[in-house]
Length: 280
Image 1 (cartoon, rainbow, N blue to C red):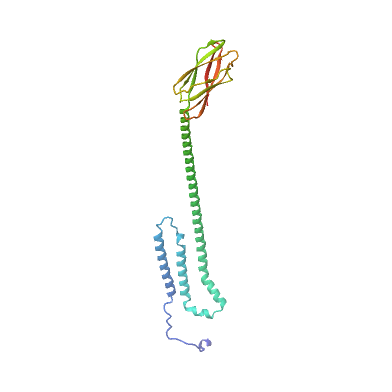
Image 2: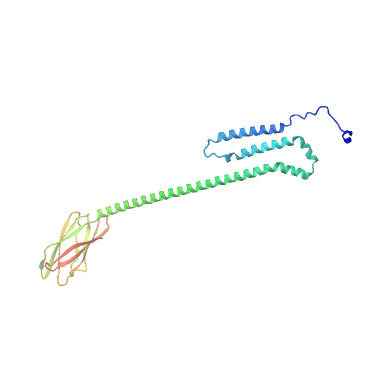
């Protein structure tokens, strides 16, 4: 009990010192938080109506606001003790700075990772869009090429049809009709009628294969719709019984053409019958 009455040294105040309002750092931080929240909220609200809006589009703004609030908070908490940094050992200063700015660095590391992911996603989407556009372009070009080929084929067919029609219009169409046989000096005399139901023909020559001995006909020019009669003599014992007769002629534009007939000797009537074989 005696120790309670021992003298105590020091400075004593009759009234405690006034340190001011001790909560001002918290108030400053809350004020900046409110300003940041209002600003970011207004920014997000103005952009939210845009198509393809996403919250990650505001990562930089959110990160900047959080960094500002954090730095203001650190400043407010250390404001009265900034001067002591000069008296601290360097390793303690480094620990302080690492602890103070480590959260900010980690925050921006995360935000950078998310931002990089978004950019990669946008790049992937752009590549997919380009691939789709290229595919559509290839399909369009393929369709156009197919249409062009079909058009060319239609034009070719039309041109070929016109060529065939013109070629047909230039052809002479002959028919040969056999008459009755007669007999002259031991030979058989046949008379044939050659008709032209096609275009005009000039310099007509009729040949036989195998040859009928002594028979070779050079016919007259024959206009369309015309006909001519021709007679020839042959020895029925020496003449072939069948073969092919060919009429060679020039059309009206000077092109050499041919028309062939199958011939056969009718031994009952001693007349050669002619049937059209093909057109050359």
